[in-house]
Image 1 (cartoon, rainbow, N blue to C red):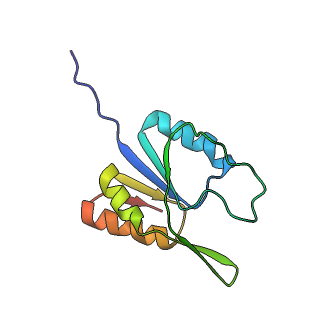
Image 2 (tube, rainbow, N blue to C red):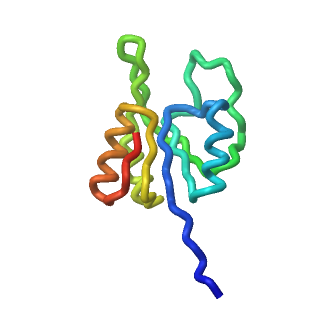
Image 3 (tube, helix red, strand yellow):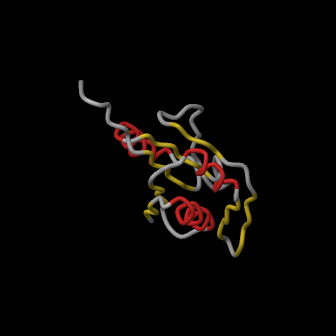
Length: 116
């Protein structure tokens, strides 16, 4: 009997639940043990309906939203502790943001890879 292969644990950190990302995240969840961490459910200028259920594990983290010069900044240092609990071997973020800094802190502490 062959030993069961462990699926790699991956976290994706993104700002809001965007329907155009769902197919890609669903496919990724078929390949790895995935959890998506959202900074918020939606933003006021988005014109889509957020689905009640998503086809992958996810969390919408509580935090504060700041608007500076028309840019939205999400602050949720709780992301670090949620990553510690999930223990991913890689964290994927979509660009430089405050959540990217939180993800970097987790990766430095844990040795996980940060993919920007």
